[in-house]
Amino acid sequence: MTSQLSSEIAFRSAVQDDMRFIMDSWLRSWRESPWAGCIRNDLYFATQRATIEGLIARSAEFIVAYLEERPDHILGWGCFEMTGDSCVVHYLYTKDPYLGHGINKSLVERASGSKPGFYTHRYRQVIDTCPDYRHAPEIARRK
Image (cartoon, rainbow, N blue to C red; front, side):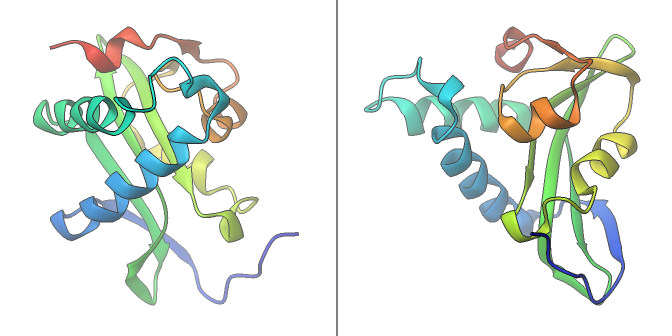
């Protein structure tokens, strides 16, 4: 069952204050993905944190969805980049109560690049939102 939203969903570029939530939600949700199992448990957080920090360092785009009346309350977010002219979806995350409101689809629509493109992290929200995108995990690890 989906929740009712009392105000409009808006979108913006992530700001520094958002990055703690983005990092935490990415690390925790990806760890629960059945496709993240190739990373040893004792190395998971350091390895994945380094990957995310690498994306930040090379200026990957982070877009945040929020309620218009509460810009500091994140409903979901996406991390994107371009390879050539193609959109690369690195990750999509929407909080459970807000799934079913089209947030992930709206995040992808706002990302730069031609679509369908690629995705790097196989995760249920990404697969459901980007069924025509090609899985290319190596893009997330390039220098």
